[in-house]
Image 1 (cartoon, rainbow, N blue to C red):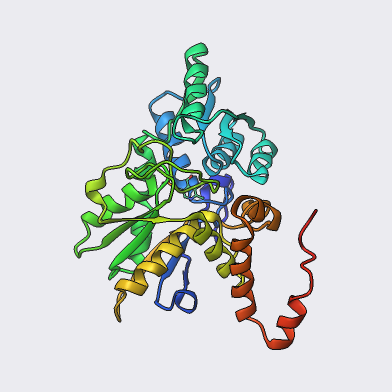
Image 2 (cartoon, rainbow, N blue to C red):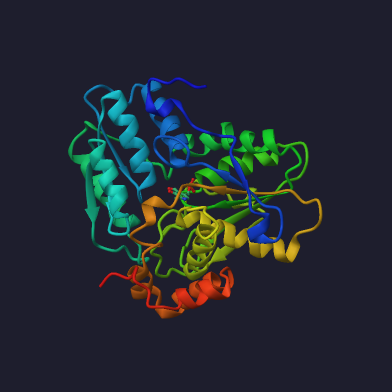
Length: 344
Ligand SMILES: Cc1ncc(COP(=O)(O)O)c(C=O)c1O
């Protein structure tokens, strides 16, 4: 039984969910949310903060600042609170309310930018704001997750070894691409593994990371509105793009089996299920990475009005169809009564 005295000292690395019954093929989902920051970003945050401390960049009167769509912000808030640093998270209006409240509860300041950049995202605006702060006051220390080598090294040192420890015969891995820290760390590790592992990067439709056309994206985690500086495409075998409606449907399918995951997990599992339906063969070992859980998305992905306003009634209809097919005839007629969960 682990006994810890700092919140960043615990991280469950060995938990996998077998999604055979949902995907129709064995798919082992590596769950990265079981730590006090609630997401995979604890790994990158730990690595980057420790490197900055070692290099003498981070000192007692430093103010950490970072641009984050949420999860890195929570992880840094937790580490900063524990180590006694001040932290300012620069995020945007797509950051979930609960994520912002979490950062504030941990004692961090949160700045929300409102202006979109030329690709229709907020990343450019967020980075401009951080740069201006650092230029004006040298107490600010920007770890820059988009360029920091510690971001991918964390996954080279932990995530990929945790996968092969459980599945030494892994054939294919599915990894969502945000900053591409997780993707690059795992891809570089698997390139050196003694047997071939196919690395499938999963991106959101509307993201420009792999040269796609920019478009509206409302679900944080996967996708970027600029090319990720850490990305080296030569380490990646394949890229799949997922529409947000498919992400949402997969999140709800998983939730109806009792697994409440975050948006990027829905994206990755949707791509993996699709890929395995086309390429899966008996005995193939497939692993996907689940970066966080669903509580942070209760007011978005799991909220009927939010879905209806952004994606129309259609996305809800197909969700209802999926729900009905899992119900007995009696339960189905009861369920067809007006949906009282919808708030005005
Ligand atoms: C929920 C979620 N999924 C996926 C990712 C992508 O991870 P990475 O930045 O390592 O590409 C992030 C990163 O913030 C995230 O918060």
